[in-house]
Image (cartoon, rainbow, N blue to C red; front, side, top):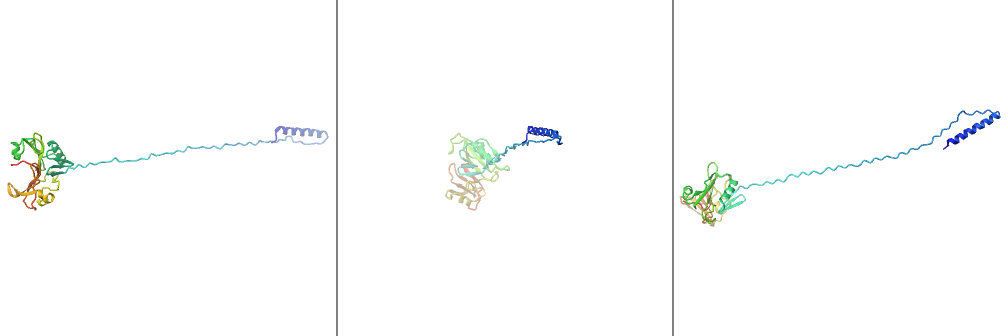
Length: 256
């Protein structure tokens, strides 16, 4: 790089030389101006600019939709007849059960009863309606449709094989039609309309007796495992295997 001070010294030397030559008679033409421009090279270094964009990660939470478990409890309103009581849905109601509890369970299965006599003196009002019933008090609750009673349960506060005297309890039932909200049948599938032959096939025939009804020799009267306070019994259109059952009763009912 040529500095300005060196350049000025060179110009001065030329001027002095020119003057000396003039004195010797020699004409020398000196440029009026000798300009030398030196531009110092300038290097500009621009530092690289790095822009770092922070990586953005968006996490979408997983959405899991779980449908609430739906539990449907089916109400079993089946009423089955037994020689020892009733199977009402999932509840076993044996002879000797509390009257109000028995009625409540049957109502849940069959609907409201068609008739409830309330407690009657078995020797007077009870006798007029049902004949000779164990007493001193008796009550009958019935189910049926169209004004027809077809299923009846009986209660007493008598001293029975099921309970002691003074305690109101269930002691018999009568089923003699098909006008209940649901047709009833025994635990072995026998119902009003089944034949005596089907009855013998469903139960131990050694425990079945078939004879004449006391009020009509042409009518059949059947019993299964009958005892003082238990068993099944009823009537039929006759006494052969082909004849049809017209009623199914359980426990020990009222008599004439």
